[in-house]
Amino acid sequence: MRSPFAYIPRRGPLQSARPGAAVSYLGALVAVAFLYSNPVVLLAAGAAACLAGRLAGARAAVRAALRLGLGLAFLIVVVNALVVNRGETVLARLGDWPILGQVDVTLEAIVAGVSIGLRAAVTMVAFAVYSACVDPDRVLRALRPVAARSALTATLVSRLVPVAAADAGRLRDAARLRGPGAAAVGRGPLARRLLAGSLDRAVDVAATLELRGYGLGGPRGEGRREPSRYDTRFYAVAAAVVAAAIAGKLVGADDFRTYPTIQVGLAPATVAVAAIVAASGLAPWRRGGRRV
Image: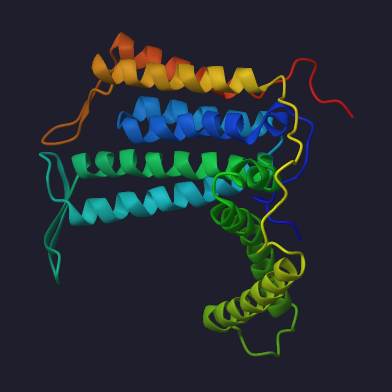
């Protein structure tokens, strides 16, 4: 059982590009999500991340990230609506709650929660595309001259997190297959078994790395991989997205206000930034489609 976030080698532009180019491209979308609060721009960034993942062949990762991201966004909206009582449009008065006090659900608090939830969802989709499309071994090789230990740690995390997710799925399937007469298995025992298996695997990985000499200094004369012809494309798209986002921020493209009343700006600058960000999702497109 393979996790949807696990890296799968494919012959696509995003997979062929150097890790720096791919990270710059996906990081530009995340930067837009953190720079802007306007839902129009956030939706454009989310559409670009989803389109990039689908063009790169990571449809399963995009679907899984959307499920997780939208679930997290819904939770953020609910919590923000219950905790924040600001806003003039009161939708429901839920009375006096313990700890929270008087709870008034306002439309403005819901819209503010939607903006924060969209930011979280866009970030999750972008990282899901990164996990499924960027080779962690190439990331390790690229970062090894700069920070060998940190690069190794990051690579192991990116490798073992999908493995842990697959283990959790197998444990759930095994618990369901025990038959109707068996006692129900709660989340606590499953979590303990998953943690025990992860610790055992961590010990095995540490022993393997020690036997292979990862604690020693590596050779200095390693050959570097030739740059891909797609590197320039992703660097250029990332620079264009960041430049458009910063320029739009300076001219007021992020015109969005929730308190005391809702104001969503749809100025030409906002539409232009959203169009540029959404169009950036076409960067992984390859002319002629997929080849076998």
